[in-house]
Each structure stands twice: as structure tokens, then as C-alpha cells.
Length: 298
Image (cartoon, rainbow, N blue to C red; front, side, top):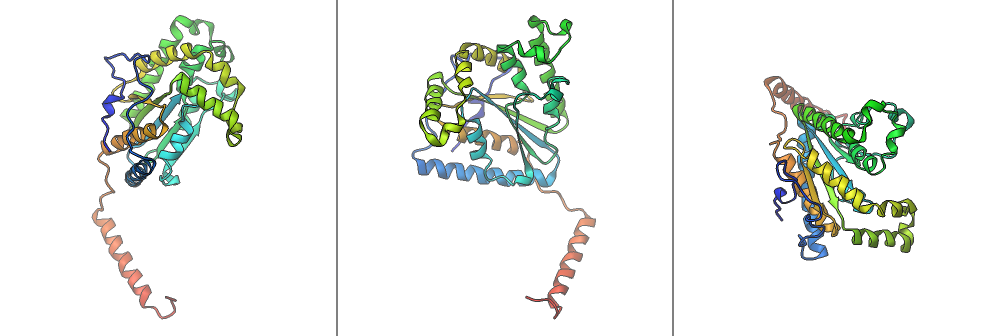
């Protein structure tokens, strides 16, 4: 299974209109078994690349997921990252800011959770909430106690886009590769999934009545996402708009794009210098000597 990431990428000089972006696409699998096999192969490939990333410890990968409620962020992270060594992967889910976080700039809390070299960091929601939900609900800015002169609605969003782009450019210059996914679910498919949370007992715990209030603001959210995607998709930190009505196809696309991002780094295990080679030879000799000791049990 091969895809072209450019089919989903938001390009810098070509503005995207979400009304024109598909929420469904031709399935990338022929059956459930075919999907399971394809995903399993991709997870294995991802695990191999992650091991090289961890061993070389030169680059970090930051994967950001943004979407409307019920688009499948949690399940996609679980499915795609299921084969990754937990030592090499960090998942952060950003909730409502704490009192401490509100006393800092809007990027502060996310910077604390950036992946170190050798790691894959997953942001389930991110600092992008501050140009999405805060734009739909500008009253949230009041809690941030931003100086009046800096909180003018006509300029604050452009300032935040600039801050985000500058942060991501800085990270890229220092070895962090960033890939950002907007899981693009249709309004009707969201309705079905929210209804399923009500009607299926095992999913009742997921239901939040507040999601229905946010759903009524769908046009506002789409406008905020569209402006955000066009303002912050760069060569160094591209956005990918992934059709999300079919979760299986969505997961296959997401995993393939992450794999391509890792492959582009041309990762390799650390080269062994003369000192290291001597240590390996000494280790081999000592281990073989241990085997010949009569006091060691087989």
C-alpha cells in the first residue's frame, strides 16, 4: 500500500478550503483482514524506524493531532503507535489549562512536553487549541489575563500564528521534525459517532453533553481551522488534512505519512569507532570465558 503525502498536505502557496477537502476517500483495503494485515505491516515498519531514531538519538519527531470531537484522535494514536517501544514514545493529551499554565504564555505548557532527541512525541490536541477553541470562544482569553494592548481581537490571532511558526521553525533547526494531522470528519459522521456514545453502553463514558453545544458551532470551528491550516502549514512543519469518515483508511494514511517522515531522515544505527569496537571484542572474550567457568549454571 502506497500513498502520496502531497495529496493530503496543505501547501504554503495554495490555500485550502475545507468545504472542498474530502472527509472520505476510496478505502485503502479490500477487507477487514486486509486492513489488519496492512496496519500490522506499517506498525512493524514504524517500530523498526523508531528503534533507529532512539539509538541514534539525533532527531526528535513531534506528531500533532487536531480534530473535532469524535473524529478518532485517541483510537488512531492507539492503533498506529501500538507497536512502538514505550521507552521511545511520549503521548500528551492537553486538557483545560491549569491556573499555573494560564499565568504563562500560551506556548509554555506545550514546550514543557516537547520530545527529546531520539523520541517520538504525540500531542493529542496542542497549542493549536489557542487559535481554534479560543478563537471560537474569545471569552477564554479573559482567563489568560493578557494585557489589553496585546489582546485586540483583530491582531491577536495573527500574532499567535507568527509565534507558532517561529517556535516550529526553531525546533526544526534543532533537529525536531514536526508533522501535523487535522482529522477531517464530516458533520453527519460526527453525529453518528456521538449518537453511538449514547446508545452503546460500553461507550457511554465517552459522552459529554457539552460536545453537542460545540457541535452547534461547527461553521465557526471550520472557519477557525481553515485560517489556522493556511497560516501555519510550512515546509518545516506541514499540516495534513486526512479524510476521517473511514477510521481504518485514516489510520493507514496517518501511519504511512509518519513512516515517510522517518524515512526521510535516513536513520541508521550509531557507527562503531575504534574504541567501541575494542570494547565489543573485550566483551565477547569475557562472555566466552564466563561460559567456560564450571561454577556457572547452563
